[in-house]
Length: 353
Image (cartoon, rainbow, N blue to C red):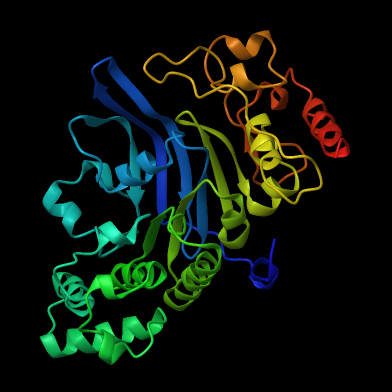
């Protein structure tokens, strides 16, 4: 799990900074409505990192971008749900009201820094503009703040590089600049969508170090979207596992990594190298979200599926035995289930290696 988690002190739990409830999002397509996110719920506490995890198409990015209504509407629309920041529902705000939230209280770092920066302007000008959009400060004060931010995110010789253009920086340096822009207004929540995917392994580690450092310095919360369980192990306090728009499992990073409770989470871990057993892929494919099947969304690909898994609605999130916060949307954790079946089967899979 890494030294960072061993050194991290337990945070005081209180009212969530962000509370997402029953978030349901559809897109109009030529084939009819596609429900990309279906009843997603989670909280983000002040100062913690929550990771949304799942394979491509699971609804991670749509969930994150809907919170500040960055998805295009139309074709997208929020069918129902709330996303409350300090008790205020962001989804009910007007575009004008949301502009005061975006970049100010909630900032985004996207996957590709190449497209997040304007290559016609210097990086210093772009960060300075981000500061002055949210604060009534002079050019000189904004420049000093920009230089401080560039220094904080590890850009060497910030005074000289202030006037450089994005194309004069490496991919890793560009991502650092994007983080500096996100920090311009000292946000309460940073939403980072696959921030290390386009970077090589060494630079990925540096960006993860940077995110944790600025989180500690700014007492900032992070909502991290990733498919990389290694990134989750580095940064997460809590994990939300998504599949086909549904929450499959939630829990602390320790609970989920020590004993993944949902068959889908278990298979995700089986795809991760270095866990003492042969790698495996997930057979089959995601269900058609234009017309999702009844029952559990993962049932068609699940080794443990039984008849009731293919009928009715997605199982509710049941409490997982002998854990404090872990829940799983699986009938084996319900009143008529035996979670030992999942544990024994997963253990058997490990011993095969």
